[in-house]
Length: 341
Image 1 (cartoon, rainbow, N blue to C red):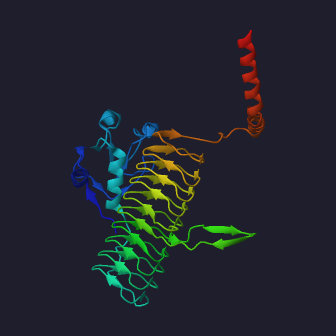
Image 2 (cartoon, one colour; image 1 turned 30 degrees about the vertical axis):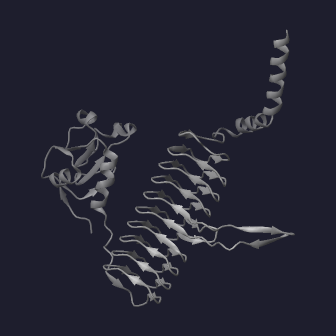
Image 3 (cartoon, helix red, strand yellow; image 1 turned 90 degrees about the vertical axis):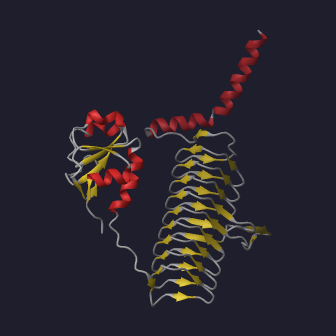
């Protein structure tokens, strides 16, 4: 259960400058609008400054530039949003997992189990699975033969890890995630599809978070690779032999086709589609619902698609879009004719 902290304690834990009452008790986090006297809140977006003067919060995580905007207790930090993220772990109210193996769990032959692990009800470990120290495997999860789970990694309930998958240390895998399923590989032959057995695996680095119902397919020959510090949202599809670089963030409902390589510290917004066999360089941001059909060789922000508008206007614009080739051809002819004159 979450506990109550003195404001002075939180200031030390967050390396913040305290302005106000060090004995103020804080028992929860809340928004500026809904905070009460026992809550800690934060302001990171200038759009919310309008709520600052009226908040009833016991204290506010605040940037030095905004000190004069709030008369109450303040924890002054240069990065309020990061400080909020750090503070959130102090108020996590989930019960700690029990240490041990539930009687209903099935442990395959040759498994190597670390110390301080928690294996929940109806968990199944295949043969030769390696589980590191401090690992938590939630109820109903399955880990296939000869897979590896690094130390202090958490698998929530009903996670499926196929055979020959390696998960790094300090990862968090949410419910319904499937790691190591077959890639979508088939060879056409006279009107039928011949399955290509997927002989690679999946390697996931350290400190990776994988959202609920996300699927990461195993490689056809080589491995699919997710580097350290990658964060992946819910319902993302990552196909076989994709490589995701360190620190990249991928939002929900994005689909990445096979053999695409994405660089380090990229951000891919929701519902983006990326076709296969592309290379995307480091520090690229792709905005929501974009379709990426070619490699990206320069860092920066990229978009595709058309913005929302009234249906009548959208239909007119869509019709004009189909006419762009004809209009461009006419303009070229006009330019040529005007040049001759």
